[in-house]
Amino acid sequence: MDVLSEVLKAVKLDGAVFFNGEFSSPWCMREPDAHTMASFLSAHSKHVIIFHLIAEGRGHARVEQDGRTIPLVAGDIVIFPHGDAHLMGNGPPVTPVDSTRQLQQVLAEGRVLSQFGGGGELTKVICGYMTCERHLSQVFLAGLPPIIKINIRDHAAGQWLEDTLRYSVGHAEASGPGGAAVVAKLSEALFVETLRRYIAQLPPAQTGWLAGVRDPEVGKALGLLHRQPAQPWTIATLADEVGVSRSVLAERFRHYLSDTPIGYLTRWRLQLGAQRLTSTHKSVAEIAAEVGYESEPAFNRAFKREFALPPARFRTQSKLTRKQETAGSV
Image (cartoon, rainbow, N blue to C red; front, top):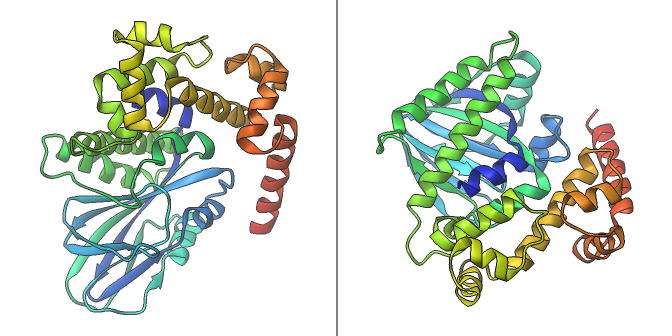
């Protein structure tokens, strides 16, 4: 049972946009944050995951508010899972070029190549932007650092990953039927494989959601909860399915997730409820039943504790916010 796949089914990775960059040293590029990117991609209600592949040459990356510079070489994929504003470059310090203009040209003109720099050493970069559901994505994104770096050329699947991304960029120009769907699916496969590589490389003492996925007992429990969130789970029934005692399951859950299995399930159900309130026209009562609540009042009380608003007002406020954001970007 692949719990990561179960979560990503709900998160719905989509809307990939790619373009090639050819930058000559010295160069520096500033990428705006996910919220700004979402406005360019007409995805106001979505979260944007930003990633880059160093196809040739070298460089470095730094999240603006972090300050730590990470060196990059050919074959590195660097992902900014929280969509933090960041800098990328190579060579001595220069004034950063705002990539906002580059992305606007990609979207408006269909451009897939950006070039600038001082004329020195060449760095070729493939830049990608992928959207996902804002609330549900926080389940697995919350445990990730601001930057993830994985080299795809030091593993048997590396060539496949790189070929996939290059193919995706080629299809960014395609306007034929199904072209956008192909790019979206390929980008999803790339992101999932990168996360799997990241999970495999986590140190044994690591905690958090992704580390919990790797643990046999916690991973199986998470898979069950995500596959059947409306099931009337108790710690006893869950432990029985996993094949361990209640105390062992509770202890391992606390170790990795700092929560109880039922506490985790409650938050996931409410996140699912929030997603359905903003993406469907189903009644609050219908959504409550779908996510595992026996009554609408019980769902209302739990939802208000989590989001500080009752479900109906949350839905109204979300619609109003989207209208304002859309009007502001026109």
